[in-house]
Length: 349
Image (cartoon, rainbow, N blue to C red; front, side, top):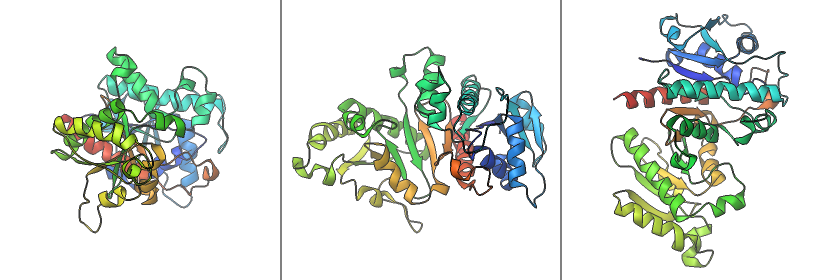
């Protein structure tokens, strides 16, 4: 790695610090040249949680990202960002936890935009804690919207000129979403010709860079049975199909719209055999995330497409109910770091 990878703390009251500590302890080959943007005391507490009967994992305070490249293996480098007057209570919502989680994301994103780090991996934050943190953090529903705003501001562009999409991926399935953190009513309203076409374009460009070829894109309908020829809704006929036709005229390989209850199975890679599609475009958050998470939350990775930086994250939340118990599984975070490394190396080519 020519540049290090930044991993954000996540909500310190959740499992983020624990899974970070486990990743550095259990996957030193993956976390090599990585560092944590966070709070030293919080990470030391997390190390204690996971260290019963284990070899201690030293936490090293660093002043700049470049120091990581010369550190020995099997230590946890932390760049201190923000302050916590008192340790947050594990498993409890708090404004201070939301604030430091957001500050870590801002620092890491800006470092990536300046070219100081190769990629950003974000540990889970809590949307309610983010709302409690106050302005400007409370104006963002989650990571994706925050990163989009930071990237647009850095580029001097309006937010609309920096469109992004969420992709959830594991070894068997990739899904890109037309809309993310909005109500179901707003998600249906977001299924417009422009939004669907824009999603197809971002998916095509991003996956082509990853795969080295044009991706085969399967498109899910919005309605049951993809509308059944207009019997159960006309969005497929009036919006989705015309957007797909435009995408095809621009050289994209898109198929559908297909019934949402079968398209994901058709795209699934299984027993070493590729699926019918490289990726599925889903119309809204739960439509796309349920099949990916059903295949295994511990292997799912969230990738933000359309940003001028590489950003990945584990496919789960803060899990307040098990925070501090040492039970949290770091597999998804390890996969997120692994994917961030691969994507950043592709970006250098």
